[in-house]
Length: 176
Length: 179
Image (tube, rainbow over all chains, first blue to last red; front, side, top):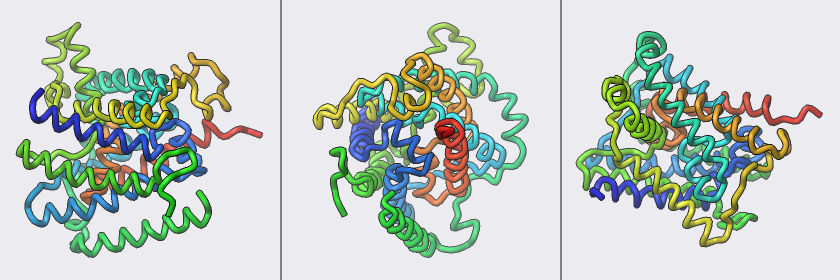
């Protein structure tokens, strides 16, 4: 195994461990988040974003790591995002959690994983068509919010933190 | 704040914050050891898995395909990360004894009954639609939802709300009991 593969595996084991401990792998947790009855997934994701954001933006400022924005391609994000949401609601897993759910014994995730592999193959076949249609409408490129609104990320981060913390207090007050 | 939840898990705030630390450690480690910053993600691995499987039956077709060529079909860092998720969840669930063979999840059964075939069809076709969407959007709740949000990427700030709004609308149509 190469260093690259070993590093990926070790990181993945910790990732999967935390997803399992956070109880976000389960079909019922995912669907109840979508039915707005159980906010576990939101609490988990937003907490990781709050913490990760500070370290990653700091490491980027220190030029230790590089940011890697995905392109803001309007058609791709809007149509692809909507399609993803439809499929996510029906299968009850996202790509990462389907694999973790299988690790927890929820073997029906196999069907979701097979479906996603077939979906990836279909996308590869249809890529030329999407490239000349959806993907060609309007691409703003790889952009970050701080450059777009011309405000330092160290102003955006505290605002983001305040908003999310307020949301967390509201979740706890409502016992969601 | 309680660290444990009623079902023996960790508080989602605590586990999520630890995942944030992992994300920071991971971008540092990939940059240091591999010379290129890699971010947590999962959906590209499904393209590589599809490519690896298709190669066994139609090698030329895969090498000629523009999307497979662009994605580079190999067992890379993210591929191993995804396999690691399986192992990590397995280790965590077996050591705390919450590992459970489940063929039909309770919420699904409440709505569609105990048929494994129905669940399999839902999961399979849902999976197809979700992956076509994730590849079009160039990310899933890991790549956009976690990694993109942490970098304040505009694409993630738009994609994540769209993922959720679409999923909330569909889930409310599919799983709400008409009673």
